[in-house]
Image (cartoon, rainbow, N blue to C red; front, side, top):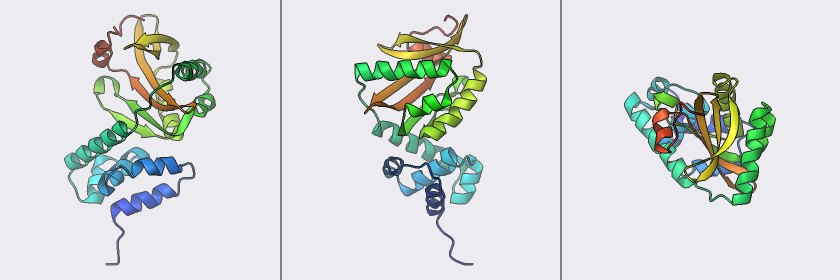
Amino acid sequence: MGNIPAPQDTAEQELLKVEDVSAAFLTLLEALTPLERAVFLLHDVFDHSHAEIAELLHRTEATCRQILRRAKRSLHLRRRPVPSGTEHTRLLDALINAWRENDLEGITSLLAEDVLGHGDGGTNLVISTIIGPHGIARLYHKFASQMFGASARKAVIDGRAAMVLGYPDQIAAIVQIATANGKIQEIEVISDPTRMAEFGVNPNRN
C-alpha cells in the first residue's frame, strides 16, 4: 500500500479548495486538536455521517459524536462578542427586515466571514454549529422552508432584544445575535419549547 494521508490532513486539504473560506475561519479552527478539526470539518462542512467519519478515522460512532460535541463546545466558548447597544439594534432590525423580504443576500451581507450559527434542533434536542455566511445560507433555506409564512418581530428575551418568528397562535423560534465590528458574529436559533420556557416564553402564545 502507498502512503495514505491522515484523515485530518485530507479534510483540511479539501477545505482549502473551498473558495469562500476566510483566514479568520482557519484561525478559529486552530483552536481545535487535529482530531477535533477533522471530525468537525467532515461532519459540519462536508456533510459526512457519523458512520462514515467513524470508518475514516477508525473510531466508533459514539467516540466521533463525543469529539464533535467537544469541538463545538470549544468553538462556542472561544467566540462570545460583547454587543454594542446601537450596533446590536441596527443589525437586528436589518436581520428582521431581510427575513420579512426573504432577502438571503441581505442576510448574508450582515454576517461576519467567520460567523457562528447555533441551533437546538427543536424538539430533537440536537445542538448544531455552523461557521461562515454560506453555511448560514444553507441553514436559512432549510429553516425558511420549515417556517413558511412565519412572521418576524422584535421582542425582549432574557433581557435583550431578539427576533421572534411565529404565527398568530404559536412562537416557532427565538433568534438571538451577538455583534461586533459592524457585523453579526454569532446567531443562535432556539426552537425547542423546553428551552423557550427557560427564557419565560410560552411557545403557544405569540
